[in-house]
Amino acid sequence: MSASMLPPNGSIIEMTSYGETVPEVRVVQASGTRFTLSMALVHVPPAQSPVELRWAAPPRGRMSQPGHVIAVDGNRIEVRITGQPTVLQSRSFVRGGGGEAITLIRPDREPAHGLVHDMSERAVRAHFTDIDLEDGEEMVLRIALGDEEVAFAATALKVSSMLQQVPVEGPRSVEMVAVFAEDQDETQAKVVRRYIMRHQLMARNRGS
Image (cartoon, rainbow, N blue to C red):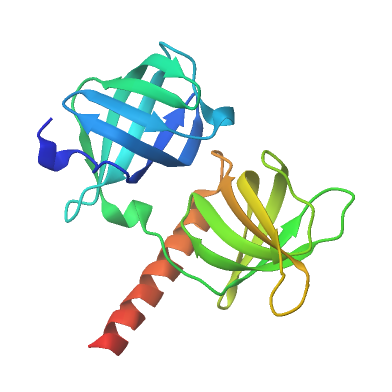
């Protein structure tokens, strides 16, 4: 594959392994047919397992490339890509939004209300206040998109929290990245995609 088609070192790409999509995988180095990738330990696939990598390739949209893991070292893996890359239409991976109301629902707990930072039809990044949440927890997320609402079964991929200290000690700020389950209703995914694209168009019109 030509260097111009490879993701730049330090960029974030997606990886699918055994049906699980990990949306935040860092490219340590990409050269020729070999990728060195870094990710959370919980998502490191075993050696010799097949994977699929996806990354942005403007203006073409997104690139999808199969490969297999040839080495594992802690939270880093070496992947050798195989076969031919596939160009995916960018509208299927549109990401945006921000400020939408989101509700996190778990069994035997009170619903938690927060705000979306950004989202796609595959994942969401959101902010909550004073909730207990850990990586790997399963939940249902309801997101208000204008006059419509979508609901997705999801798993917390990455959770970080910080206690407010300035100007005075305050509530704990919790940031979450959650991935939606693979067997989602495609209709809801289209609602998210349509909503984001509509708002991107409105933003471009305001800027013109």
